[in-house]
Image (cartoon, rainbow, N blue to C red):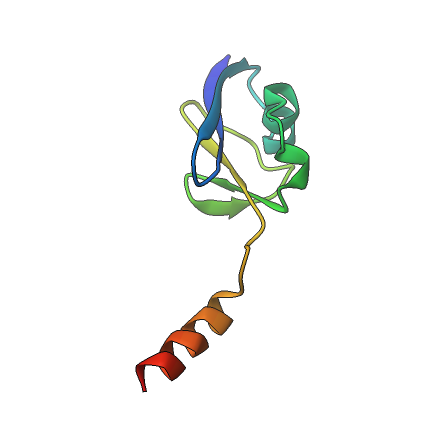
Length: 86
């Protein structure tokens, strides 16, 4: 058995579940078992900050991070700041 944490962060709160899974469990297994509200709207997942695929295996102590969609394009934000600073 392994213990992992599944996390989804919003600007004002964090949802977190610590799970005990069988050896060989995948990212998809952890996300499904955690059943965190809003996880179905997350377009990507990371393990310890690195993008992960649903079929990636997990190890003891892994932190699975559900990544929310971006509200604004970072490139557009940089362009806007550059124009404002000129």
